Image (cartoon, rainbow over all chains, first blue to last red; front, side, top):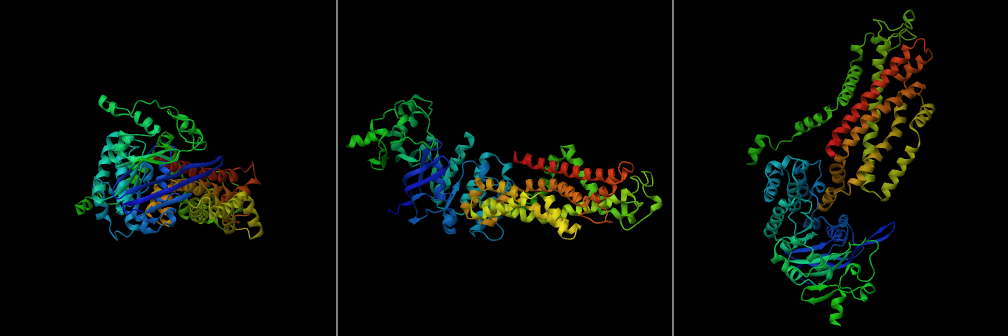
Length: 322
Length: 297
């Protein structure tokens, strides 16, 4: 249990019971987030990346497994977490149009965490104004309603709300994917700036690989509830190992030949992520895998550390070792 | 800088502007405005009844057989009834009882109905949800008129018992309305955000969820006002609501029905009066719904 990790996720599972069976939204994943780093969690829609984020902030209680935050077990729902813990972990949602109450003004929205955690007593105007300035919004926005703001501005308000309690860890659940491209860069730059300023740790959830490359220091890639590859960002982009990673990287659209050369050999993406109800046996990626072996549909591969800090879950590397 | 902003009024609450916007949306539909006008006129007439009616004393014990059953004339625009009382006067006084009944019933049922719905919706799929909603279902299963009839028949038939009976039947509709909204709103990210922050259940229910239900509640209250008036009149019609000589629109209908169709004015004018109030509240309710529907878009 090293003390450099702010968050450790150990064998986390989250199953949902539905009428047709059990959905294994998150199936036995482990990773850790170091103090002050941005840990990227990538995957297609339905891969369980958002569920993971929701479990960490406590919106769902895990089915099994552990989450340690600063060494303390926090694998329970948000209702049972102490207030002091809620102060440390915050979340920014994907769509600011739904994460801000349309019936409450910007001031009321930002004020809530200040009041709940007793950061401000009495007049909160000063503190709310400071927070708005921190996210580069004009102070006049205080009495506006979210519906009167632009998408990017709303997301800024959501970020200000998350920052209000002075947290140490923020889950960013696709914070820019609902926004215009022109605003994405601004939001990302701001997030990076406040991260340095307050020494924050981020869990950055996205499906946008190019974005990940710019913000994350380590990346884990999820497929059908499982992490298939985990590596430092550099390793991940220059030396991808899992066929799924290669497939995703080769499908990033690029402009220059130079960039094209950096990409792994072209692999045509085939098929789509199967439904979470009928996860293929063995390695769940095998029906789409261009390099599948005979064992792939029978035995599930296990996670192996191929290089220091570079983990992959694939039979290709199992057999290479054997 | 903050002081300066406050001086400029930028940081002041901006209710006036919100009302202006709401009025703009509302007034774009002339029917809604017509509904509002009808409701205002009816309420004003009811409040000012002793001053605006030609024969205020006709609303009490009063008999003048010399002038009984007079057809509409200049002196009695809606004619007189079998006791010689002015029908117009009694209709305007009748508004009082209809509106009072609607206001009382809705004031009694809305708060508990809404609060129970909020609790059940927020705690969806827990035992408290089951308890509240099954009890609500039991009350919904009994037709309001039937229960009101039996209560008024067992107890003394008067307007108070009629109101209690109707209230007893009416709250579950508010519980159901708010329940359906709250149980979907609680999954909204803004509620999840408040939970992550650590806001209290009371805050989440009343400050995050309830404001988003108010439009629907207000619309329902307005539309229900019409229904309660109809129900109250129905109870009076069968003799279980307001008792004579109280001028109630339902009582007037049943009294006049015996003389149909020859002395039609005793029945027809109160019937039109009920229709007008009901129409007014319905149009107003639609207008209020338009305000909130436009907001949701």
